[in-house]
Image (cartoon, rainbow, N blue to C red; front, top):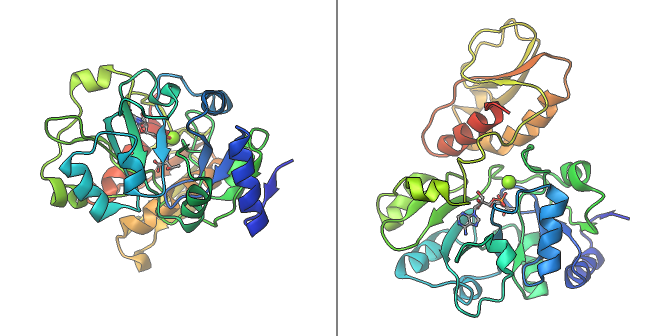
Length: 320
Ligand code: TXA
Ligand code: MG
């Protein structure tokens, strides 16, 4: 039975479930995670199984503080500076594992590195503090599908697999964390996300793009080109309707002729990519439930959070 609540008793139930090696639906400021005790191989294996996730794709270990992260992975000065500026928050750092890192090797998917993050959602922080161990938490969707931004999305995606879902309301960032590789050499942007490129570069200087070697190794972002995919096809940079389409509209888009219009950010919201990011996955899910042939999306600016938004949309629209 899934319990959908965040009363103190459900926090205790969530901690107990993690200890028993069961899965918990966990709100974070980015998206909801499918959480498991990162130190139990069987629990981590269950995360892959529940998501139907290719085992080559490694997981993020979530912890309550930078100090806790630095116990798991090597900790260069860049990590310290990024943590001081952006943690708790939507930033993930990929670093070499320490020799006695207690996180299951399965979470690293065969790499000698581990991704670590301190989320800022109060429910996530409370759970991590109460549990006292690292927690792996990929987005709580079946592999390849739209990431969940509410507790009910988690139930719809993976209800049968989770022991407890903590309800922390709607996610306020709405796209996943930015993933930065700190592996010697210049920092690498492995996945654009909730902290903008500009905000990371202000701390550590220019970010490199992943190398060909990075993209051949099992790892972050671009590889699985199709991701975040609704059941309906998606058409990007749409300005005029083609057939019976639902429009995810932005800014000064002209919705006339579209069968339905869902505003990512309406003219009254300004050209606000922050608002659009917070709504993206929710509106993709809503549009997917409409009686239309296709989901069309207005052009979106590429600056700030727009880089992450356009990244997710390209993959939602990619060849399946
Ligand atoms: O915002 C988020 O990051 C959410 C919330 C729940 O915290 N989690 C999330 O996890 O998006 P997931 O598993 O869906 O995405 C993790 C990303 C993937 O692109 C993965 O390939 C990359 O991080 N990653 C994890 N470990 C890595 C490693 N050792 N080296 C390179 N990339 C890694
Ligand atoms: Mg994901």
